Image 1 (cartoon, helix red, strand yellow):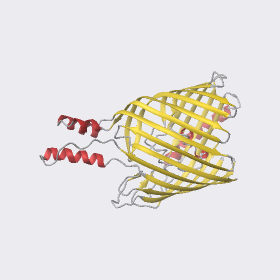
Image 2 (cartoon, helix red, strand yellow):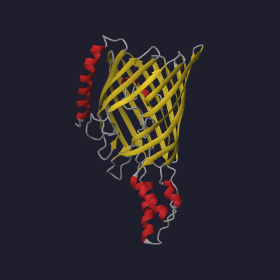
Image 3 (tube, one colour):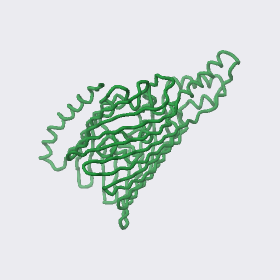
Amino acid sequence: MLINPKIAGLATVLCSLAAPSFASTALSERIEFSGFGRLIGGYLDEKSVEYDGYSDNLSLSQQSLFALQTDVTVTEKLSLSAQLLAHSSEKRESGIEWLYLSYEPTQNWRFKLGKLRTPFFRYSDVIDVGFAYPWILPPQQVYTAYLFSNYEGSSATYISSFDDVTFELEAYYGRFDGDLNQDDRKVAVEVDALFGTILSINSGNFTTRLSVFNSSDFSVNIPELTQFSNVLESAGFIQNAESLRFDSSVTVYQAGFNYDNLDYFFAAEGMKIVSDLLAVPQVDSYYFTAGYNFHPLQAHVTYAVSNSSYNASDNLIPKGVNPQLDQLSFGYDQIISGLPALSLNSLSLGLRWDFTRGMAAKAEITFLDGKPGDNSFFNNVSDPYFNGKATLYQVGLEWVF
């Protein structure tokens, strides 16, 4: 069993910091504390690959976390929110997850400024709060690690209603400077200008959401590719050199709906990424999920699909002319062929048990079906004949307080 001690240590620190703070809540009604946590164990039945960090060794170190949130009411219209998160996975940094000011001048308007969640999808704001959704592992074809979860900037939201229909329109603008995980490695990404809009409509038990994200100033730093690109340019192969330079735009489209009448629910969500960057693939993905509630239990099933491609230029470097050109040509082919393909179908079956207030136990099995020869979200593939099929088993304990 693999257990990362980082989660235990950071959780202890957070609890020790929280203890005197909780005592102070009796002294001030302006300060509220809340938190959440999850302890997740997983096992992959395939020894030659990893999936989302899981292998054929039982691991508690991929999605387990603990978080403490503070909300401070400065005035009736102005508040401050901060969230401190301790995560067990080595792919994510622990620390301040968000920190922002919120201003609500009227019931219809809400403004935020600071470090915010990037609202790509329906569950983006609560993606770490496993208690808030049915799965243990949200469909990775949509909730992919290729997209960054935070940004520094501002947002404005307008809320209105007509009869029993509520409309919510949000616009946001900001920047991102950090690392993203790509094919089991960290890639430095800088987005100087990102902006997006979200339209949500709620009527009774039905909710729909449409959003678009865009960045016209998106750059990725992969030193070895930059150096190779410079060599290609010096040799006169400008088109192939430019294809390896990551300074372009990325657009993400999202659409989804949800119906929930407390007895049963069904939902769907889709995403399309349009990009000129080799570091960010063009992706079409979606999932369908349905579930039935028989309190305190919930059963659910989810089918998810993803297909990807890259805007790679044709190799214009001739072979067979001289050894130097052969080396450049084969090097370019190797880079293009090594780009991770994200084509994957999956079927998940899950059971949730809300055994007490604010706590739930979950069990989930996910059948993964990727294309043979593609990465298909798998990492560290040691068997060249791996057929792209594996099964992930997970159990978890989720709580909020």
